Structures are given as C-alpha cells and as structure tokens.
Length: 136
Image 1: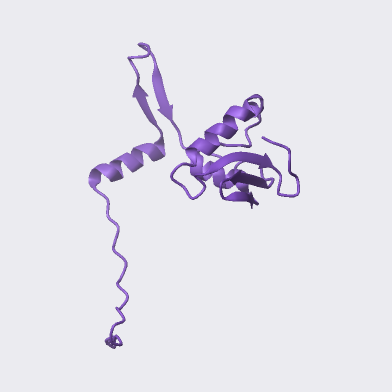
Image 2: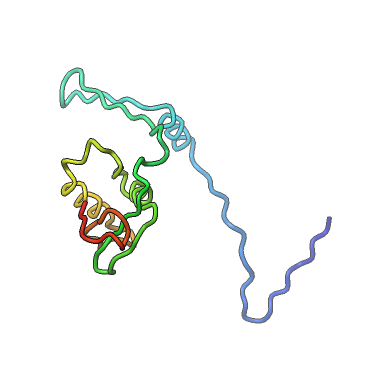
C-alpha cells in the first residue's frame, strides 16, 4: 500500500512521530525484580535486619470521600482526592491506623507535593468545599 506524502503549508511544521521508548537490560532486570518483590540486607542496623519491598496489592485507597486542598492557589476540591494524593505522594489517607497522626500526615502530604502543580498546598480538608472546617 502506497502512502501519500504530506505536504506542509509554508511555515507550518509537520508533526513528528513519537520516539520509541527503550530501556537497558539493567533497567529491565530491575523492573522484573521489583515486580516480584525484593529484599536487601541492612547489616548497619542489625545483623538480621532485612528490608523487604512488595508491590501494593490494593490498587485503590479505602477513602473515597472528596477532599479539598488549600494553599496559595486557593482551595480545590478533589472528588477522589485520597486516590490522587496517594499517587502523587505514596501516602494512603484512607489508612485508619494513621488517624491519631492526622496533623503529621497532613504536613507530610503537603511536603511531598513539592515539585507538583500543588506545591503551594498548606492544608487538607475532609469532604468537599461544602464541608469546610473539618481539618484532617
């Protein structure tokens, strides 16, 4: 099958095809090891200390309520805020065992948002914009 060449009008650049992503053998091996779970001895801590990494088996956080985040940008309601913030920060806001540490947890989430469009965040509120005043 023959293709028709694209003729670009003067001054308008033609779209370029996307680059093909490639990874090295070392990167592929690391991805396989992480997918299976990985262990690393930590003799500096103790002779029998072992760091074990496992992939999360629960893909979604248990807290599905709206969340509002505030900062220098104003206040934004995130419908599935816990899920988004878990993806951005690695912190699961729906973990009930962390309830006694909400102040610390809120600060940790805001600090980990550095380098994202939400970097100016300085607080979180449970519920949406209609439920103001219930700080995490």
